[in-house]
Image (cartoon, rainbow, N blue to C red):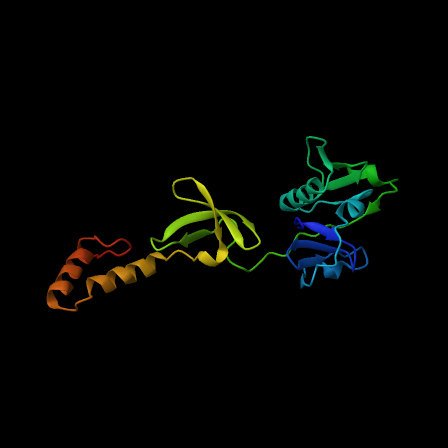
Length: 214
């Protein structure tokens, strides 16, 4: 079973970040390829991450980018060392160690290979980490903390965590949806008494999300 993210050089320089899903790692002459999502059969692709990252250096573009590079390197056997109190956007990987916050002068006479590690394209699929999700007949609502293939790790309202398959999750109903349902319930018999009760509830502000102003 493969662990993501990983790099494969079997067919091309590909960064796999989900099953059969990758982005092409461009080089200095092929920058246009960064950020494109590719869908392909990875069954014959080998994990060459350690070999690819060894004896290299590159530029860190953001905090999110740095966190991803650290995750990738740490996952595939490199020790992480952060040097310097002031952030500088360079990393170096050599001798089984990744060093961060290095000045550009370190690479002026360096024989290491420069590489560019792209961030995976932002997915438009739902859910994403941080989304509120609902499940079960009682519309329990929790927050997604992590996603692994077709399963989500969800923080429940009682602060316990549980694993739920994505297909069992739904988007929580909006306040407008809940209001419509409540109005439909109030008007279920569609008679004068129900309508009078509904009018009183609206005027008295007893329906959440709806109020009456004179």
